[in-house]
Image (cartoon, rainbow, N blue to C red; front, side, top):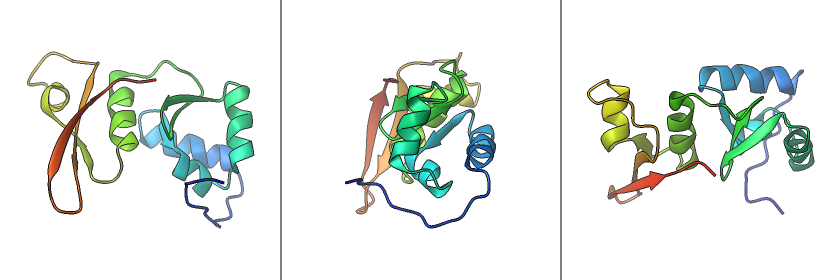
Length: 125
């Protein structure tokens, strides 16, 4: 049984929907977004086996190829940590061009329901 929400949205062309979303997110999508496109767990697994999706982090996939840009790696790390996550520390300074590009590890800050922030350094899987 999946721990991810099930969406009932009807999408005429799931692959086009996924490609458009990935195009706005530096080439990555979440499992929730794949479900929103109407893809079942079996459909996602089939696309992984076929090389159309590539796992970057738990619940986050690169679409079409593994070769993500640094921005794609940053986006994947933030998406992997949920809606309360933001790029932080050296990674954020690199994004704002305050430092030379720092690709890995990616620094993310996550705020919990109490408003307490924790910092996470993450590497792609």
